[in-house]
Amino acid sequence: MIQSHSTRPFTDQKPGTSGLRKKVKVFRQPGYAENFIQSVFDVVADKAGATLVIGGDGRFHNRPVIQTAIRMAAANGFGKVLVGRDGILSTPAASNAIRRYGAIGGLVLSASHNPGGPEEDFGIKYNVANGGPAPEKITEAIFARSKTIDRWLDVAAPDIDLGRPGRAAAGGMAVEVIDSVADYAALMERLFDFDAIRALVKSGFTMRFDAMSAVTGPYAHEILERRLGFPAGTVMNGTPLEDFGGHHPDPNIVNAHDLYRTMMGTDAPDLGAASDGDGDRNLIIGRGCYVAPSDSLAMLAANAHLAPAYAGGLKGVARSMPTSAAVDHVARALGIPVFETPTGWKFFGNLLDAGMVTICGEESAGTGSDHVREKDGVWAVLLWLNILARRGIPVAELARAHWARFGRNYYARHDYEGLETARADALMAELRAALPGLPGRVPGALTLEQADDFAYRDPVDGSVSAHQGVRLLFAGGSRLVLRLSGTGTSGATLRVYLERYEPPGGRLDEDPAVMLAGLAEALEAVAGIARHTGRGKPDVVT
Ligand code: VG1
Ligand code: CO
Image (cartoon, rainbow, N blue to C red):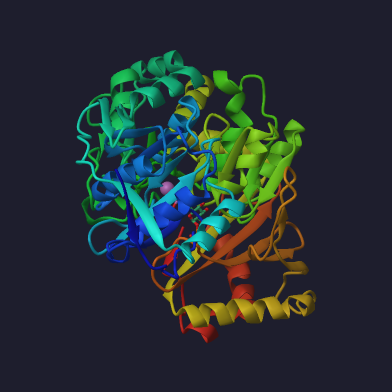
């Protein structure tokens, strides 16, 4: 029996960089999640009888929203829902499930690297049939629908038992609880040389993987400890918790500080890695050697042919605009194209579907390939392991050899968090207005060659996304990039990306902060961050 509930629009359901993210309190308002889910369903054509995947990162509020979404899917005519055991699917595993089972799309319940718990964040993202995040055309249609919605539909049905794999039904619609890990682990076994990695482990290679009490714990236990033979205890914080143990599940050197300290210590294992709330990001640290995400992307691209899935070479690579140009140098050497897209994985989908690129990445610690349509934390760790097994050298040596061949893109991201939205907007507006006159007027030793507001024309469907971030391009390959975050849930976050290129034979073994000091000075002169925000320094530097 379909029930129609009348409702009134909420005005703030505009998806950001990666879905709709709000405080749990906002999502708990009566009708809030229902309105958004119904807006998604109203936009999905051909849903009658189709399969929908539902999964989340296990954070607080996952379970009630999953049960609601199942009842709503039944009322909206879907034929079948596939849901992860305990409601849990990592974001890349959800992408894999959509592709493997021919689903029309999926709801991914996550606020990713944002903290979880009753006072923290929740999120809902819609992925389309290719397994990837809905493109802007669809997120815009969902937002438009959310502004006019006047009813949402569900069926009267009891909660589904999500505790074990099996079949059930909700209001006549089939529901299948799937093992979250098995399909994903099987996919990884097809991509990588597990025998070579097992031999590496047998030879005494050690690692530490920090699942940050988030979604990848079960995946890492199964793949690293059970299938690859790393000893129990290799995976730390491996049990998903609704509040991530009170931590920020963001795998950077600030939030994964214990791991970082271990890796810089005297008894460090050979490899340290971590992933985020929903399992799509990765942190890579060798013994005494932090690998910046943009460098990791470049090093993976340069060595990917050592893994079975990429032995035939890469078709092309793509990076988000703020990501450093390290991978561009690799692409040039390999003779393959490189694409520069706006921030957010949704912009890689068309390139991957068209077979124009094989590997993509972002400076925010996301890397992935054409095996799914999301970035994939565990995939990145396994590709690193595969490469290290085949090269037989430590991470630090691989990094040094890489820079000696391709040069080094020194890089840092400065985040100014919790700014008043009006002040952050004023800063960006003033900077944008000043762009035409900027070249030739930057103090100091740097020569500004080009200043613009990045716009992207998708080479596959021709769609244009403008105002994706201000770029200041200096002579010699140095850059400053400024943009506002689209994933925060309170106030505004200003992100500034600093980059400086040193060619082969140059100063390749220096402290990034020292190498970027001149750019940091130019930044204040050009953007006036202190003047606009009252902040003398960033909250987080990664
Ligand atoms: C951030 C990152 C971006 C990433 C996005 C989603 O977006 O900068 O690279 O794609 O998060 O990642 P923003 O708009 O806050 O800069 V995840 O792992 O939080 O889904
Ligand atoms: Co994430």
